[in-house]
Length: 464
Image 1 (cartoon, one colour):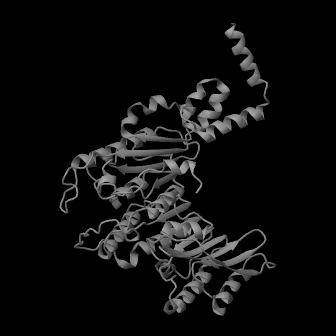
Image 2: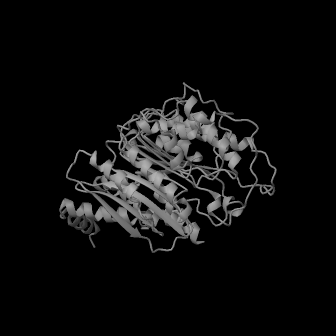
């Protein structure tokens, strides 16, 4: 049998398909992602061009991968990489890991800071081209065996579905290393720390990291709330001080999404005592709310969930301010609850919001929301091409008072579209709300408030 002729006829059969059909077939292969699909890129140059774009779009690295990373990823391939997930794997815990008194490991501090330093040194040599997202995670295989049982530390499954870091970065490895390019990382435009990083983040270290990105346009930050209110005040002050003193949020930043998860949402997590700080880091008048409110003047998209309430954000906004860039704003408020005693406060909050929105000429989406187990609600102001609306969506009904309606009608009247009339909508949520993740899902908030993979994790953790 002439196998060479058979092979030639098969090749001719593939080439005989129109280019559009061949691309559709290759797109199906990349979508299904059967085991070994990436190796098909070696079949021919046509397959390589299509499959490598998907195969290299998002890559996952460990510290051990960095030694050969520069050799494997040629300068030609760098342009097709859009997302780097960098995972620092820590050693397994010792038998005393669950004791209440334990000191941080110096070895761990060098592993984390050393891994970050090495990756930054590599990325500093990359020529800025396409948008590049850098996502950092630190974890131990023992996490699911001790403090964080029955949780999701990876988001691999969400890619196919429909639906903490040591506080010692300030020591060990030097941050100011001009020779190795630590100061300037121009290739990265998006920086992500998701909730699956459940270790304590040094705010000083975070500030140092953010200040090293020269072209950063998007930050997605999902920290965990401290256990105690007194520690929250200390932590918020530390963040505010770090962002203020180090100018960590660059002028290039356009989109900032902050989602603060909390152990109070989860019954199975152990309640651990929090240390009480013995001094204040920052004057309350220059606290986190003031820093974020001030930074909002330069942003196009801003979402802050649970870290500060909308009331605090509004209180820090000055009457002379004008948001000439802001297009989307989403905030949470603990006032939004099915409690008749809070109705007057909610009315004041919504009227105050309308006054601020009038100073945002480019805004098309404004959201106030709240959610948790068994409850969810959102006040949504939305400008579409030919309509403007206010929607109340939730598990409970809020009758908008005439004062609130009049206030938002005034906001609409200031738009450069005199023909638009404010539409009032009311939508009831019937779904079961098992967690704050379910609340976000059913509220269908029209702007990003959390990373999709994190939402996937929360909803499944809430069902376990």
